[in-house]
Length: 203
Image 1 (spheres, rainbow, N blue to C red):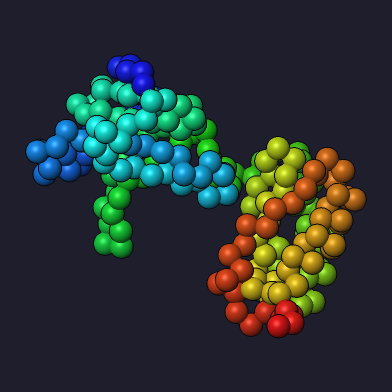
Image 2 (cartoon, rainbow, N blue to C red; image 1 turned 120 degrees about the vertical axis):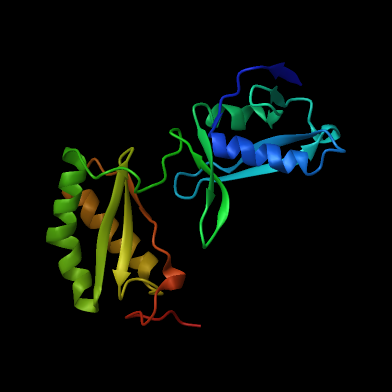
């Protein structure tokens, strides 16, 4: 276990005060804050921020103490979180820590720009959407990253039991034909939220 002073993450004033208030409410125990990257996927990055006791530290953990409290991370999480910012968000609907991590920008967080994205968008408009529109569906380009095209399916395609077949046999083939640089496609649709799909899968 190594101890260094400068943490790779920054806490906003509100987040730091919130942590300190949690620690003060349990002043009998010397607690630390563990930050762990539960899922590094840009499709759905997830982080765990928990209070731990001293005996819960692991041998390989990195320990930082520059925020007025100890921050504990495993080496991989520390690497992924380098330069991240942690804030405390409180709204009517929810409250909790929010991690802004420049290393794991969620899909769709950046504007669509660049010649490759433009060509993919043109192929979708000309060759993909006219076909799926016959079934009341539509396909929206969310992002092009590392030559992977991320798509969202709507209308009759959302919740459709044949969506994966449409994606692999139809849309992917068309996009690769029209834009050879495309290495693959990913469906980022929440199909469980779709209703009244054009096709239904066999039970």
